[in-house]
Length: 323
Image (tube, rainbow, N blue to C red; front, side, top):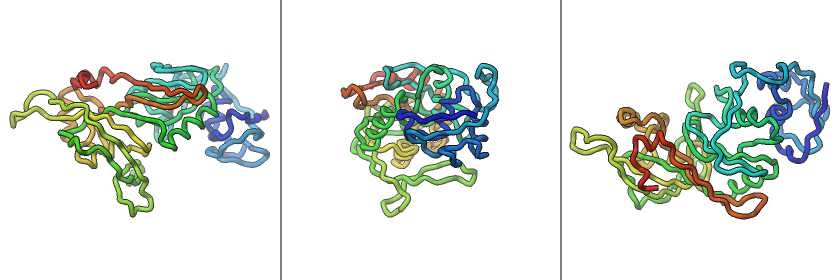
């Protein structure tokens, strides 16, 4: 039996994430099992996996049988292979990486592991690595990770206060009307019969509707591929979309609701158009977290980061001239 005393830097962290960090090498399934069984105690009482720990909490941890030297093979249940990602900025307080498309930011919902679990495995000496925000699995671009609990709280405060600027690049179907610059439509989350999460635009009378604001700027229009039967090439518009709120699937749903779905979007897109784009080389959703602006929590100066549009998107859409 061992005891852990929660330090100030870990104040407010979820219990499961805290234990995953402290009990290096322990499979996620084992940690959840000992929490559910009541073997993990906080201040002598039972505790849930999603409970938040506080400075000074005393956690009783049962004896855990870990793999030899705390190392896990990549094919074991819940194990994340160590992986580094392209670094856009790093110091003692935070890390900004360029997340590739196709990688979840964290495990859950049928995904064993994501970016944060792989980073923690690649950097076992790091006392703390926590996601500041999230990106959809199929979205590439800037992802911010905090190295200190105080930094995490400060950056998330900037998100809540809408002082952090997050701008995405999106290629959408058709010709976007330049007069349509502000999308201020509330969003409602719901579940499909199979449990998959979806989002739709609702109205101000919906008690579950969350106000959502996206600012849209046209960067240029493109003709994709060869001309069709009517003598015209399929048209698309490259947009810079700045979100003032960070709702689930916000950009995807807003742009689709406006009649201009994102290229390659398999949830809210135009599926017939997507099939045409696949023949032109479009293999995934054209949504990229391009620019991020925020005030450094410790140094006080404004940072402006930018992630270059990935080559897989540039390869089939000649939009570099607009950037």
